[in-house]
Length: 187
Image (cartoon, rainbow, N blue to C red):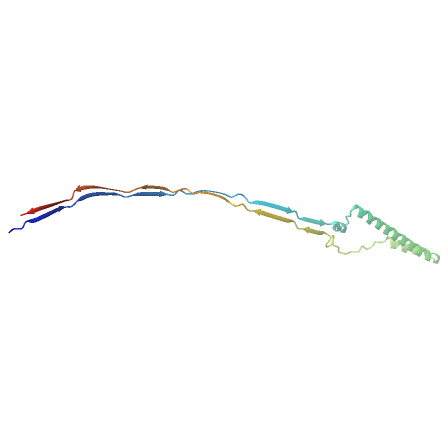
């Protein structure tokens, strides 16, 4: 006896698949940035320095006097010269008077004339003109105040949004061969 046989044949599906990848582009624009720095406020106050020079003593040492001092000095010098001359004349007169009766009148007059007429020795000495410390110098220091007030910078930042361009991917497919099953009974 023969048993019938079943013959099964299958045919697979054939698919053509095409994949298109997605495309993504992201571009970030730079931020718009504005920075400004206001200038600082500066206040400067100054008191000038003073230099005081008094050289009147130096002028006096060199014989250069103010008119008032000059009049006073010459009046004093004149008074002293007059007193000295009166004293000298009185001394010479006394000398002549004491020796007048002794017969030495001519000799006394010659001696007095010699004393008054001969070359006189000038005193010699080194003198520094003007004297040390004759110029008085006083200095008053000045004062300088500087006040600064810094100003904060002004920063204006504008953030730009990113530019995002996205193209989604795509999958396409075509069926080239449909699947099938054939069942045959042999026998």
